[in-house]
Image 1 (tube, rainbow, N blue to C red):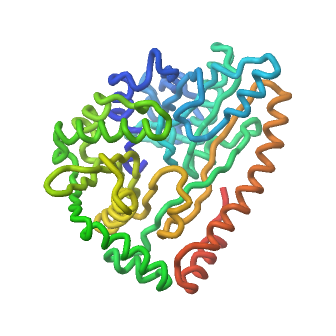
Image 2 (image 1 turned 45 degrees about the horizontal axis):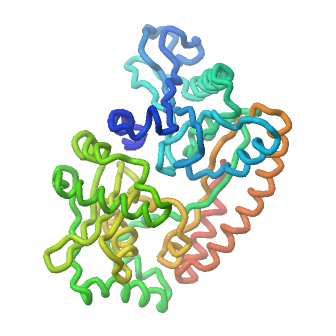
Image 3 (image 1 turned 180 degrees about the vertical axis):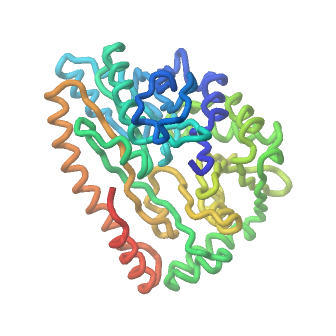
Length: 391
């Protein structure tokens, strides 16, 4: 699991205990799990192993009354249901609330003495969640942003696959930021250096703080910036509560870093990162006022620096943002799985997904055509893409 922070019980508990999910949020946690005393024998690869009542597999899932905070947009589906006099909500969603991060979506027990058949357990989880769909009278079930192994484990003829696009940065054994920039064509390299140089020209200082270095005062500053960012985007104060971030600082410190910008001794902006053994995840940011290129510095360049320094292989800087491409972030395909109860809508949505997938492929090709890398790097990337087998 590579210490994936968004499946860590501390992260999920912080969401619930802080009131970020639960009553009055439209995110009602559902327990979808396989227990040891109910598991079929073919889930245990060592038949001599003793079975007990522990949970062998669990999948964080939520009953939803809306589609906010998911980042796989199905508003058009909900509108179509409404136009036809049908209820799209409630629906069940298995995902990390408010974070469109690709990764494992099931926690499997670590058991001494035998191995679990994760594919078989995943197939049983499908049955469990569809039973819950019927019990709730829900319209559908959606598994969002699974990694490749989860996608394979949940392969099922009734699950339709949807594709999307994000922009990720990949570490190709760079020793420093200049090594990374050396792969750019001259014009784009100059652009990035100009943007980074402007921090000094504006007398902006930046520090990276980790874990316990992020004190209560800084968390309070960060939360105000987080709220301001959401207020600008949507007129709301954001999904997450102040208590959520305080709890994370106490229970998930080893997976957290924050870039903090100051000017004349006063904090002006910050950006929050999560990380595991392989990947850096850029999540939230905010500033007291706009400064030229500050967003790029805190949310992109500081993250790349951090990933290089800490030998992380990938930087997922969040959803959207085509401007990332010119700064070395590559378009990657994301995935989701969908089960639609109504056969007529399932057929119509399936046709839509086929067309969307073709459009997605063309969009990725178009985005790759404007990557800032030198020609030999582009050719190497094409070889990598050809050799990588699709899921």
